View 1: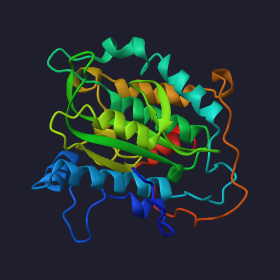
View 2 (view 1 turned 30 degrees about the horizontal axis):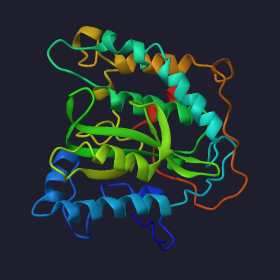
View 3 (view 1 turned 135 degrees about the vertical axis):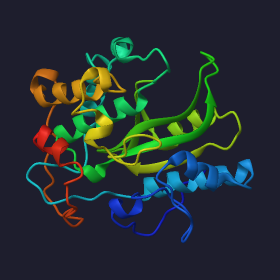
Length: 278
């Protein structure tokens, strides 16, 4: 589909603070409810056009630079590729660690856990907050290869030097253009009406709109933590990780100011930022 040009976009926190819906329309914290509302009475082609518009809005948005000595607005492709390799081999969220945090009563794919890991790692590397987003495909899906079904999938988006917005998927361990990622996963829809949403990277899961100590289990013993200390161990690893030892480089700080400093209070996520020292 065509990525037509758009007018100058507002700040990212305004553009993606809620799922993209028509002005005055309903907004739900739960993306399952949002998807049900957004697709009701629409044909498959109408849903597809809404998704394509959401993709285009993201691609047209340039995050600009927030004046800072610590953060930058874009990351190099090579540095991002190395971050993905670090994730893949990580002792907590990597390919070989899935069974450690599995539950007997239900399957947890942890795509949202890996997206959280990558978000926090990119922030630790010095990529500014509005240069990272999360991408969601919501609706019934089925893999043609493994005969596995699920109700949503999430990936991370980062602003990459020389490329613009790119999707980083931790199921396929690929970095690819946003529109390619959207097409690939929308093709796995079983009803032809998957909804594509862009949200702030601080969204926790499809039904929970933000990180919290409760959801992350940071204050719970492992026996009471639904996720078996998956996120507790993630935080421990993140706090101890040394970028140089991992072969990662700090993102070059921004030297220009194209967007106002983000003055949002960080109290909701303060423990995470303090934990990471960012």
